[in-house]
Length: 218
Image (cartoon, rainbow, N blue to C red; front, top):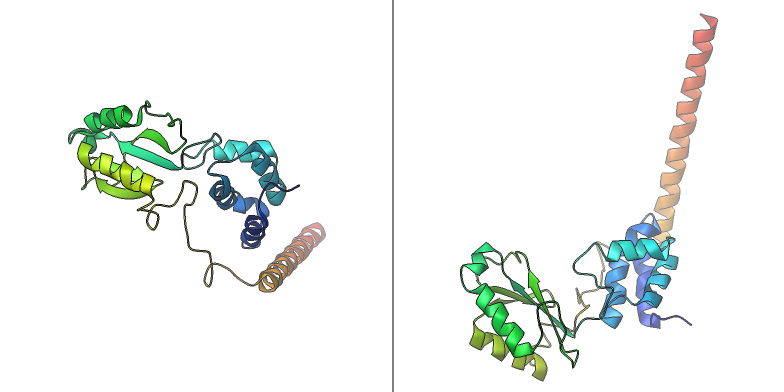
């Protein structure tokens, strides 16, 4: 029985069809599977490997390389506090200590209710709003201890659902015109490319044979 839902499976097949080689779709497929479960379950990794024509070990190796992909469970909301230099000078370390105290977990931990996972992050590239905080990779602006507590309350109450989806959903817009082509059109283009490459190889082979023959007669 498939672990991926019928909808996710269909979207996965559509993604694979966008690439000349199925393996090229591996990272987008990981994002898609993580959207379903919030993290990459072993059974999902097995299915992604089949879709891409690679081994499960290759999927695992790719997933563990990128910070935005998780091979272990995380909370509904992944809260990242930047402690790089600009944020550190504006109270990021103090904010992180406050976050750990408020959530009752150290950085890297997940609350018992599985609602929040707290991360200490390197530069989040929002240096004009320090200390920088992200929730599920969405910027939530500069935070103080008071605003951070209010942020947690809003997340618990679902008041930010329009701007901060549950962890795993990296994009809410499906690929469409400009990035996605009709499967028949893609197949026709690939066939034409293959024929052109074969023709070039034949021409190259004929040219090499002529040169060899000319060299022999000389």
